[in-house]
Length: 264
Image (tube, rainbow, N blue to C red; front, side, top):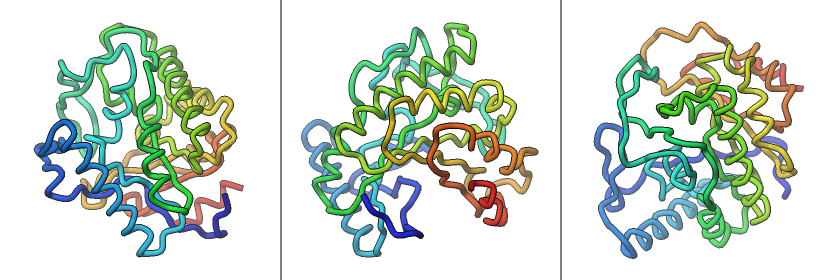
């Protein structure tokens, strides 16, 4: 795979067409079922990737048209997580709020592929490089309710092992770039130092494919209050891991991109 020195890409997800899905309280609800849904998701993915090519992106994604969210689609392939009987959890996004989240009810272990077939379909749509993304261990923990009372660092390592199995299979299937989405890292730097960086490293065991970690402070237009944490200390710590690069948000955080000078 060859990319230009300054390659154009996106974080990964694109809006779904109205004929494919609607949104209720931030949850994606598909309008079709069964074979008709798969056909519609295929069409939406193809159209989305054509759009990316037309606007000249160098590194494409499948637009995550099959996903109800960037986390649940992956967790559906893991044992030990109940996506159906969800529970309320107080979480922080743009503000603190109660949200229904999946429950961790047993040892987390990958049951089978989550997005490997998604990758194969995407690769068949283009001759350009394709990137696929999975949520990182800290973000999975932040977006679920642990009912097993497992030690949090140990839980993170179980999740990392499950994600590593998925990433290894994506690598074997020809994925050009792998991305781990870890927005939770910007909210809990102390956890990054305690176990998050180590869990990220576990995700990448055996990975030779170029890899990025995505970090962000949320969407523009949210509350003006900023987290007390800053990118520099986070990037410095993550530079010690196997990660190959960073996909970092600057619109919400209002950081000067010069901060990336740390990443040398």
